[in-house]
Image 1 (cartoon, rainbow, N blue to C red):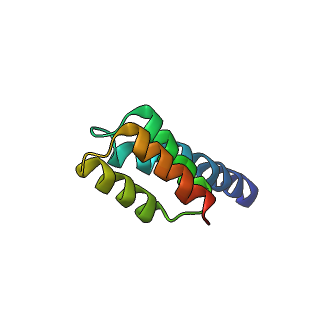
Image 2 (cartoon, helix red, strand yellow):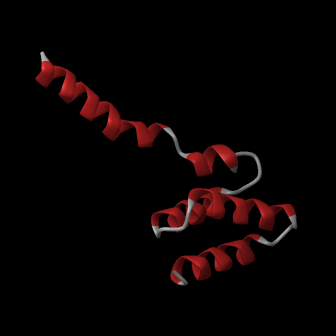
Length: 80
């Protein structure tokens, strides 16, 4: 029984990140799919979720062009 419970727990732990794409949820109505992908790439590169999403939200709030947002995301990702 313990093995079964451990296996179920492991499956839930591994699957849960797939359901919770924070970048997609928090940028849903303001960003294009390219900008969301750039934000996710920043997070995968090691930038904190809050920092990456907050930076992207601020750039969109101040009406940065999509090209400028994507260029800045690439700079932040490479500047670790």
